[in-house]
Amino acid sequence: DLLVIGSANADLVIGVERRPGAGETVLGSDLAVHPGGKGANQAVAAARLGARTALLARVGDDAYGRLLLDSQKAAGVDTVGVLVGGAPTGVALITVDPSGDNSIVVSPGANGRLTPDDVRASGSLFQASRVVSTQLEIPLETVVEAVRSLAPGSRFVLNPSPPRPLPTEVLAACDPLIVNEHEAKVILGDAPAGDDPADWARVLLARGPRSVVVTLGADGALVASAEGVARVPSVRVDAVDTTGAGDAFTAALAWRLGQGDALAQAAAYAARVGAAAVTKAGAQESYPTPDEVAAL
Ligand code: ADP
Image 1 (spheres, rainbow, N blue to C red):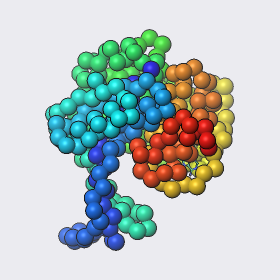
Image 2 (cartoon, protein in one colour; image 1 turned 90 degrees about the vertical axis):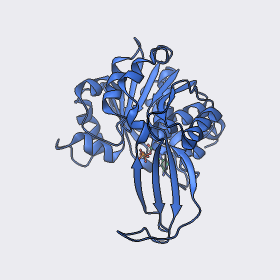
Image 3 (cartoon, rainbow, N blue to C red; image 1 turned 180 degrees about the vertical axis):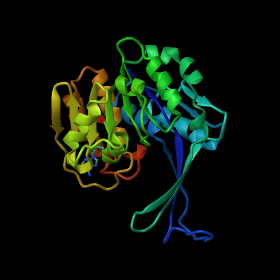
Image 4 (cartoon, rainbow, N blue to C red; image 1 turned 120 degrees about the vertical axis):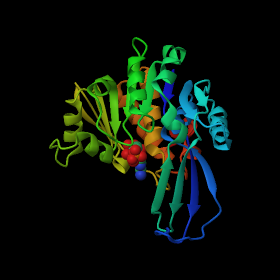
């Protein structure tokens, strides 16, 4: 039902008293290795909710690549589209200090080698999918090729993260374009849109997407379409760790849209999934089952 095209990274995390400056060495905690990357996160989140999900991604022929494949399979994701080789698996080197501030270096590695040819060779995955969901931790030309490969009647969802200006062809395909506040501001660029997220949603919608969703963290989200702008209620929870909440939100929304929900209805469900994801530490480790969503 759902095809996620995107990144798969190993997140290598070390706790430190103080993040090192230039030329400095500091000692830290034991290393923690977590499966991550926005594509891999979305696929796990959707599969855990019960969605039939496939991932199109690229990892290296190395231990981190196997870790990522294992975590996808454990969640029930179809991994025939997870291609192996061409470069080392993407990694994020993360240091976190006691106040929670972090410094991150990302090596895109194999994610940068997921090419338009890889998309063209995956036609059967597109034929089997009602919704295709992507982000921007893979080359933009690969996302463009995904738009061109959509099966008739299937729907394209994009979370432009990390944000960058988008070609008209990609914007026009989005249904919806899903942005947080930071991504909204970068995509809007110099366009005057003021401080009201409802205005950002309207201005973004005028750029061509069929619909727009602005996520607002603890304040929930906004949905915008030809029918106007509507607020999606937030769900009050004790936030422990917001890592990966946006990926869980996007995955849940994309899946529910493919199941026939209207945009506002799908977004309300996605907000519950995002809220559940912030109640536990980590990204993929924090993603809820349907029972956990229902229990909120
Ligand atoms: P991102 O992780 O991309 O920055 P957000 O922080 O906006 O995205 O989170 C995505 C969604 O997850 C929000 O729209 C909301 O529904 C839910 N969410 C995130 N943080 C919280 C929170 N503290 N309390 C309740 N829901 C949250």
